[in-house]
Length: 285
Image 1 (cartoon, rainbow, N blue to C red):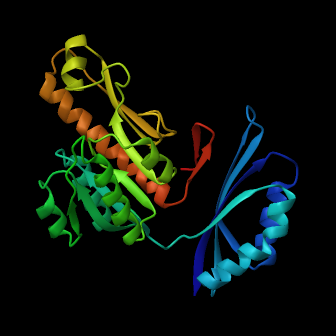
Image 2 (image 1 turned 30 degrees about the vertical axis):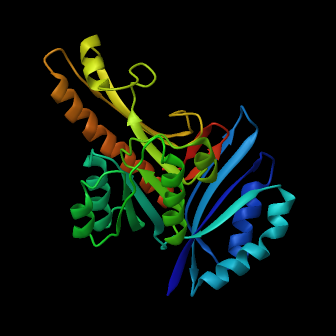
Image 3 (image 1 turned 90 degrees about the vertical axis):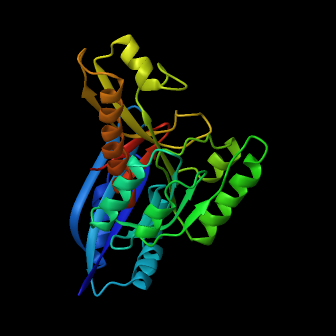
């Protein structure tokens, strides 16, 4: 019986990195089943993802391997992370009144298409408590007003930490998170929005797009930062539209695109395929 693990790393680019990493894994008895690398010429940084099997491997062995890897990590000044590939990512989902993305994530996860352990759903409305119940997931109603926003965010963090969550997904949660909360969740929160930003901000973006006669609509999934809707982009997609389509058609098509884009971003995060590269991401699909 074997266990599968993932090593994610980044460091200044130099000769010998791949040789050192693969040689170390071979010496440890590992069998590499997937490997990808990227050398960013603009920043001089090297990125790598390696998935490997260890016969009879356990989480304890993984900890020991990380310790044994320390001389290699130090030699190349690496940032290195080790993961159990089979372990689902503990996750909290957030939603407001539009449940399409939420429903899509729940169905995909229950079908085995996402490697998530969804521990709670949080919403500022009660609309989807029955949907949560149908998946046996705890539902937390945390209403938000301008006056109660600090208390609401404190409650959100309390739930996130109590559930041992490692990922927060804003599945069309329509409240802007504070700068402080964004900093506390850096690299752990994914948001989805229509790709019209910043062109069509505010209410009814699809109506605005229809009024302008756009020919493309789309969606962007990104990590949440204090800069609103400007965090490192994980995934984007577009759909073509034409003059025969009304606002309802654009809204429906845009919603479908948002669902697919968010699901891909969440999947890649849960499979540890994403590395931050400054304000950008490296995604080993």
